Image (tube, rainbow, N blue to C red):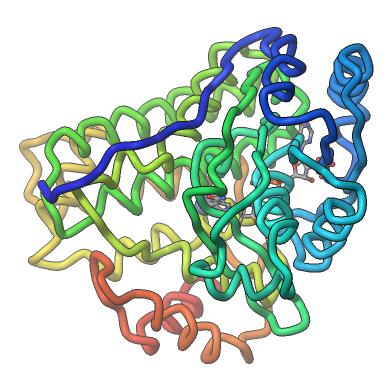
Length: 386
Ligand code: NZQ
Ligand code: ZN
C-alpha cells in the first residue's frame, strides 16, 4: 500500500428528514445563498418547496440558477458566477444529481475568480478558493456530494473535462434517500452503473490494497443487490439508502487512497458525452464490458478471476480465464437486466466519424491506468460497442 493522507471532511446528514438541519448548516457560512438546480424535478417532487420554506423561515435570502443540463455546460457556470458576484452570494446550494452539484462547484470557484470559468475547468491549479457548498442530493450516482471533482462540458469545442480541488468538496451533504424515489428506472439503473464503474476504476489498479479491494467488492455487491430492487420498486427505502451511501463511498477517495490509479473507462465515456451528449452512466455500462475484454490477459487474469469469484459468486474451481470471462459476462448481463442499452447505436450513436479523434483524446488520459491502451485500441473499443 502506498502512503496517503486521509481527509474526507464533508459532514453528511443522512436519512429521512435531514433537510430540517439546513438552516443551521447554512447559518454557519452566511445568509445569502444561490440555489442551483436542473430542469424542474425538484419542483415536481416537492423538494424545492420544502427547501425554500426552510430558508424563508430562517431569514436566509436566495437567488437561483435553474435549468442546469445533464452534462452541465460552462454557460450555466458563467451565469451562476455572475449572479454570485452581482448579488454577494455567500453559500452555494446545489439541489439535484451530479450535474447540479458539479455546476455549483465551479460556480463557487468562479465566483472567487476574475477570469473566465472555463479556465478553472481546463486548469485545476487555478482553483485556489471557492464559496462554501452545501449539497442536497436527489440522485445516487456520481458521488459528487462527497468528492472534490466537477465535470463540465463545453459543447462548442466538444470537451467534457473534470476539474478538481479540495475547496470544491461540499462542506455538508444532505442525503435523504426518499428524495431519490422519484428518479426514473432508467436514471436509477444508469446511476447504479456509474457507482459500479467508479468502484471498478479503483479496483483495477496496479497497486495492492487488500482492504480496499474487499471494501470495493462490498460496494459492488451492494449495487448488484439494490440497483435492480430500486429499478423494480422505486419506493424501496433500503435499496435507495444503500445506493445513496454506496455512491458517496465509491468515489470519496477512500477506495483509492494508498492504491492510486488513473481511470480508464471514464475518459472514454466523457468523449462519448462530449460529442453525443449521452447519459454518463449509460455510456459507462455500454463500454465497461468491452474495456474488460480488452484488458483481460495473462497479466490481469487473476484479478479478473478474483472479481468474478468475490463479486459474482463464480466458482473458484473454474480455470482462471473461464472464471474471468464469466465475471465479465455477468457484468454485461446485469446492466442489461436493469434495462440499460448495450450498444452505442441504441443511444443514437450510429456515426463513427468522430471515433478517431475521441480515441486520441481519451488515450492521452490513460497514462498510469491499469492498462495503458493505445488510441487504436480505444477506437476499436468504440467500434465494438457500436
Ligand atoms: O434536471 P432535473 O429536472 O433535476 O432532472 C434530472 C436529470 O434529468 C433527473 N433527476 C435528478 N434527481 C431526480 C431526477 N428526476 C426525478 N427525481 C429526482 N429526485 O435525473 C437526470 C440526470 O441528472 P444528473 O444530475 O445529470 O445525473 P447524474 O447524477 O448522473 O450526474 C451526471 C453528471 O455528473 C458527471 C457526469 O459526467 C455528468 O455530467 N460526473 C461527475 C462526477 C463527480 N463530480 O465526481 C464523477 C462522475 O464520474 C461523472 O463524470
Ligand atoms: Zn462516473
